[in-house]
Image 1 (cartoon, one colour):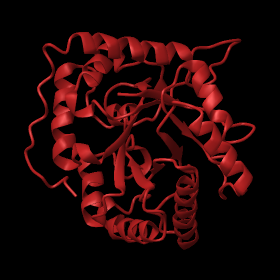
Image 2 (cartoon, helix red, strand yellow; image 1 turned 90 degrees about the vertical axis):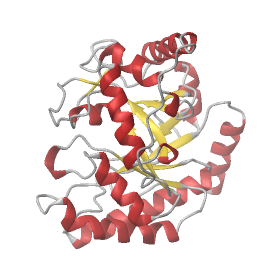
Image 3 (cartoon, helix red, strand yellow; image 1 turned 90 degrees about the horizontal axis):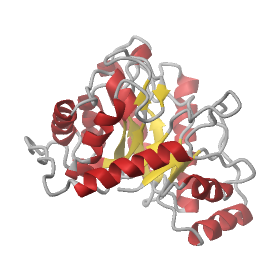
Image 4 (cartoon, one colour; image 1 turned 120 degrees about the vertical axis):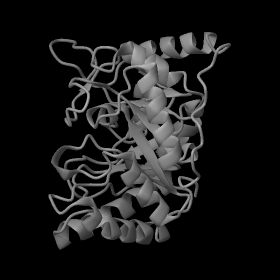
Length: 305
């Protein structure tokens, strides 16, 4: 289980590896361009080669790209929908060029129309984009906290999307803060076990590409996406100890998206203290592996693709 983080690439995509190494990250997530703006990076062949050289010289990986925050495959606005699909396509093409595992993105919000009303639109767009992008790049749907009609706060919603797309390149990223905010109790061993049971049934563990490892500032089921440093929030250290002990997740990379500890009055994102704490928890659960957690029961194979 690799432990990594979202890192800045100010100065060029290749700089992410140096920043990751500085905090002890073993895998990374990056933005290929500012996430609050439309338009993806226009990478020159030289910039791509610079990234690939830095990647080859590092033992850090895999690499994930996080998609634009503006994307909404559930939008009823034709322009936003079309631009979202085009942007996702461009991001996956970049992932293919730089050898990233794939693009993690927020599916979007139905804005009150309801999940069933937008399901077909999402799946048709995703299927088309997959057909037009590199076969080695995963399209990775992220679960949501449930605010504002966002898609994927319930695992069965993401499972249904994967089953309809029926393409092994379609994967899921489980965000722990989002899941907790949506009502999945990850603060205890019992809650983690129940979530793993549902995850295995609805998604299938072979379809989990990564985990966004974030504590939550808000209580269980609050429906708000507010990340906290590991062990400092409502999930707490015990929850992450239970999560990292799950055998089903042993090979799934963890990516921190936490605020970081305040230096000069402000946190600057994932930092070494958070990485070190997760590594400490990983070592602890590894030492306790003589009594491993019981794997989640495979109730059904509907998550298999």
